[in-house]
Length: 366
Image (cartoon, helix red, strand yellow):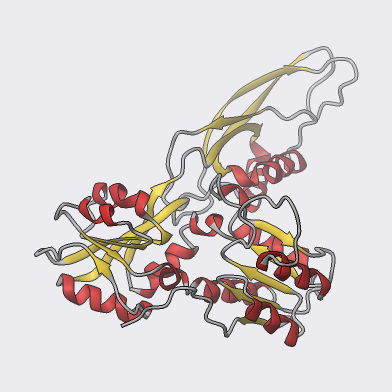
């Protein structure tokens, strides 16, 4: 069996908590991480129905997208609905974990799943985050270079877009003098030594830095390893908010609205004035995405769909793109499927279920 912590650890490698927005509260909500996992239930929101479903199915880990605790609690009062839910979860020995904007901010997460559902090609992040990667520069005897690079790749370095094991090497002569107390791999104490070395440069996400430095020291032959960790201003197309890509072929604006209405099961779609131009380049953001309208425009999108748009937001495109609000729950509903699939692939030894409850709190009267 696997512990609950093992499941959460895998989720945090997939969507590191560091990528969450500053206002967010992703992560542990309650529970015992050391307990054996009897099963996982995935849901968009934690509700009484979802919690009871986990209890009835003897599942002790619920993974939700929206954190049930968004603001600090000053007191626990039984009359408060959220307090009731959490106390019931604790009494039932059920752990709750939220994976919110950190899953929004990786292209294989919420927005990548939305893009896949409507068949977008050439998908990339709509608004990349800054300062997500660093560069490692180190120096090693040439005969150890291949082994060292393999260790660094295995630790998470060297991936750029759809390419892995990316590095650059150059050769030169390193010098050092081993002092009293040193145990040099090559050379003699108190005498300058010259060694033909390979300089290795690799890019890595900052979330794997500690593992990478550990791997560097473990695989390097030198007693004292010389290396640099350099900040980068580059933006990477895998980390950030929203997504943008291309439909296989252009379609009229009305047909595009009909397609997303069908895919997402939206009862109705609020949208800006229909543009005469066909829709092919599409920007999107699951959940509340009004802040990315300008990003959609700068990426030359023909349409941008998201949720929670206000009245004045619909003036912003000014005929330059089709802006659509498909509903918050509707835009993120496939997150439960995404979570279920990922956890099941990594932990096939216990049940991973998607909740059967529709947690959408918004209803429409016609």
